[in-house]
Length: 287
Image (cartoon, rainbow, N blue to C red; front, side, top):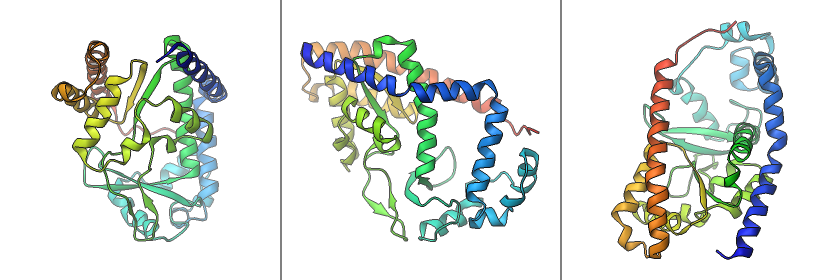
């Protein structure tokens, strides 16, 4: 990458980071009184979805406060929600949400079989509301990220295009679709691996192309994946197929020195953290 390209990349990442500042400030305000922020969010969700089939079944319109919500709406697993989700997947509107379901995403979760997770525009906005403050804080704490590229992997890889029985698409074409328009535009230009790679349906070919792009990218600064084991599989693929990658020796040495070792350590740290979180998780009741 030439000096002009590096300068353009630095300017783009700085502009992108600046666009995340309002979300970070909103999060800071909410964090000063998390109970109030949570209560207001709950009230908004109940009001928005009171007229849905699920909302009517649990009398969302009569719920006032957190204790009433806990009394009227049971904590359930996916199997308890499956009949409701199946109705929505068949095309029935206003089952779980008033907002139309834009897409379903498959998730195996930590237990059980395949699950369909519905995504609406408000839900995707919440995704951005959660990730944007985190990203802003990363750029603020680690200025060296300015002028670097990123690799994101949120959706399952190497899959065929499909729809539910009601015609709703299953799966995003590109992981940037999880974000808002501004973030999507910026991330599309900051991604280390092109979005077209996600459309490769053969798993081995997808893994090879992903590894090739990551190895060739000397500006890679941030990796975010949905599961730490996913990242270790990519690292193992890089080590196994290194001779096939046709990456210049200098870039190859730098990638192996800086990416494989450091990313493996971070993936293991994340796995340890998730394990500790599971150990600490409980069914505490908040009044």
